[in-house]
Length: 533
Image 1 (cartoon, one colour):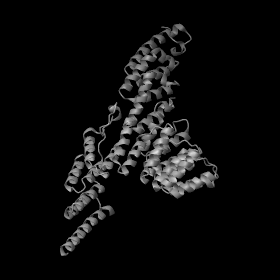
Image 2 (cartoon, one colour; image 1 turned 90 degrees about the horizontal axis):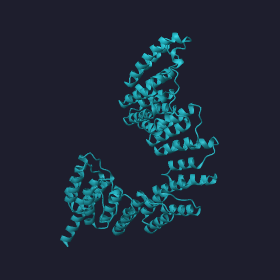
Image 3 (cartoon, helix red, strand yellow; image 1 turned 180 degrees about the vertical axis):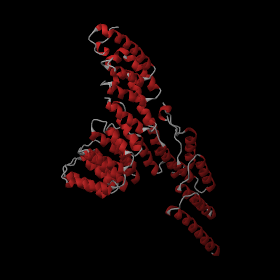
Image 4 (cartoon, rainbow, N blue to C red; image 1 turned 45 degrees about the vertical axis):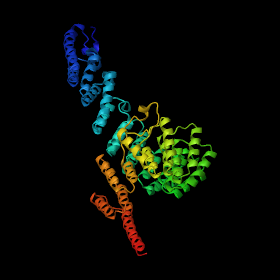
């Protein structure tokens, strides 16, 4: 083996350097043994000792003689034992020896194990430990964004509602503005408005100016957390500062006030007056406001306006319109015209759109039409969900076909889906997940019992046995069932049982029991009147 001059200590006399070379060969062997056994820190200690004694002139050259594969094998061995902090400390020690790229000593497989270990720490909610390792690896020249997907780390911090950790992580990424915007977005998704503002203020304190996207997230977070006033204050602050707004900020502001149709329309007109062109998101938000205010006429007018401007709608646009606006108003002809328009533009309906169509028919108690649309949905390859199944049951009950509702419900309970006799080519692909009936389904089946309170009681008991808790709606249905059967005492007892179950009666429950008592008195008066006649 030809020995590099640099790790011999730089001796000028070859004869004098021979003992040193022999000695170093011994230490090379010892270092290789330590490396292969995963005792990497001890190996670094040996290298440092040789450097201090002048026996080695260059750490990298010494390690090259030890063999990079031996070091990599040691790193892999340690990482497979899930000892990431040990390898991080080894990389830090390499950096202190003047080695600028410690990642070379991990190899491709070793680096993948580091990535896997960081991901495992996040999955186990050991977020601070993960970020501490990332901070140390960043100082060793590692590119942090390649070790952990930024969104995963930010989401983990947001779940913990820990802004300090999130900001520590942001400092490891190249673009602090983009990182803080992403972090604000994750905290917004968690409904943590206070943390969103903390990150925003931390961004400002760095001297980096927030961009329009920052304000979009801030306003949107206020809206999602129900603080429309704070959203308005931010928006008006931008206007006073003379900031040139864009469609995204305006959309966020409109969305924050979606529950107030007049405010949304005022902002919409303000956009038009400012020369800001509305996009499909703008119209989706206005459609949402129409849905919340149950204003189908305005929605229709805006829909025609959108088509006139040749703005291409998306599946959300059609879904919102079909789902509530036209479905609530029972404009079935317009609903299916909307479906035709959707098909003609090549937009594929999703589960929300299909379920909205099923729901629109269900609200009209059109049993056969509901089942036909459901069949179209399944044969189109769209997987139904619990909402879809509930609309099927409701259509049957409201359409006077309780027997069919019971049949479909039995199929749902036993198979985790409702096929309703539909022939499907790839049934396992469409109905891949088992869907359990929810409390809405059981309430619907209690309604199907009508004047048979004992059957309604049995459905409620089955509901409890399945792990669900009867809600106010369940008890009101039971009270009404006793009332319709003329059993005033049973209705009163059901009302009392509701209170004992921990559910506080509201106006609906009181109305139900008052109705029972009132109707029983009317029946008594009529009986006396007829008897006297």
